[in-house]
Amino acid sequence: MKGALRKTLLGGLLFMLLCSILIVSWLVLANRNPDLDQPATVVIDVRQQLAQGAYLARIGNCMSCHTARGGASYAGGRAVPTPFGNVYASNLTPDKDTGLGHWSSDDFWRAMHDGKSRDGRLLYPAFPYPNYTRVSRADSDAIFAYLQTLPAVKQENRAPELRAPYDNRLLLYAWRALYFRAGTFVADDTQSFAWNRGAYLTQGLGHCSACHSPRDRWGGIDGKAELAGGMISSLNWYAPPLNGSANSLGKWHDTEIVAFLKAGLTAERSATGPMAEVIATSLQYVSHDDVQAMATYLSALPPSDKGPVPIDDNLRREEKQAIIASGARLYEQHCVNCHQAAGQGVASVYPALAGSYAVTAAIAANPIRLVLHGGFGASTTGNPRPYGMPPFGHVMTDNEIAAVVTYIRNAWGNQASAVSARDVNQYRSQEGL
Image 1: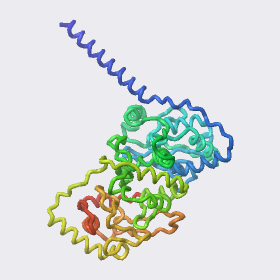
Image 2 (image 1 turned 30 degrees about the vertical axis):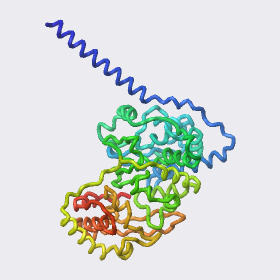
Image 3 (image 1 turned 180 degrees about the vertical axis):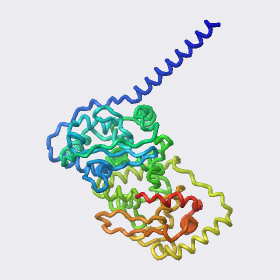
Image 4 (image 1 turned 45 degrees about the vertical axis):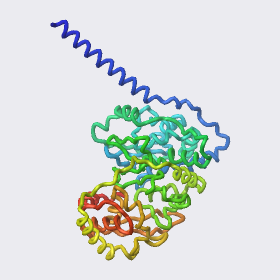
């Protein structure tokens, strides 16, 4: 009897040991990055490299994230909210004690390409290294060279404020094994130069998929769902799909995409929320050729069925019609002067609501937030004084806002689910951007 028990215990221990070895082997192999030994770029024209680095930093929107409100540029300290807590952007100035003063281009390349700090610590993916890994060594070196020319600012980096167990960095090994695939961008020889350039910028420094993709409960992105649209849960804005879905960019002409990305405005559309900030601080400074390349790539993407599923509001036809009728009266009272009786808006001034995916998306967060809190478009060279949307949260109840949003989602040929007062209430205290 004792011998049988001993054999059972020994067998169990051996099984656990084998499982442990397999798990450790999986983590080690999954976190292995064979590209880190790429040599630093041989620089012939330093001035040209610095100019290129400054330009690429703009495309990556580095200053926006790494500058606290009212703080020194690139000195870090801005909170990057995540569903697991706040991660604070680091100091990118060349200060030797708190910044990148002791870093080398190899250290910076490892952070960009492999998501590891100079001391080997794993970086949280609030820093979008799952996208930046696709950036070339030459471009990484150019950005680092530019950052080294900035004024050194002594500002201590702030530790992340994450709830347990997400504050344990060791768990990042498992996260990376599941969701991170290192590797620089590889051009597709069957596509044009413009398509490849657009793919490189969109997938890499532009890190568009970081917002415009659905994430699972662990913050990971299904590779098949990239750019299929998703809720930016930490900001409570919905980032629409950027693929060829019929309700998204599939209806846009390349010239409209370019105008939107450069000026934040087309005849029928206006950027707002987080996208307005991205356009104001980054995309408006990107060259026309590069924005055109991004438009070429995005407009060629096939549609995806991985986006949010339309919601059935479970209302009887009579109930929904009553809400729509109430909303129509509110629209006539508050909205018609700008957005017009047929929802067509005013070209290049007030966006159209008729036929707008921003209005009819399965997730109605954006129109609800805009009616509640208002908002401004991006201030750009092409649109220096954008018209704003006034807030109505102080003059309308949750039921009234639900009614008017339901109306615009179902008027003029629009078709979408109704919005409830409960939907409105969850955003009432969340102004965000």
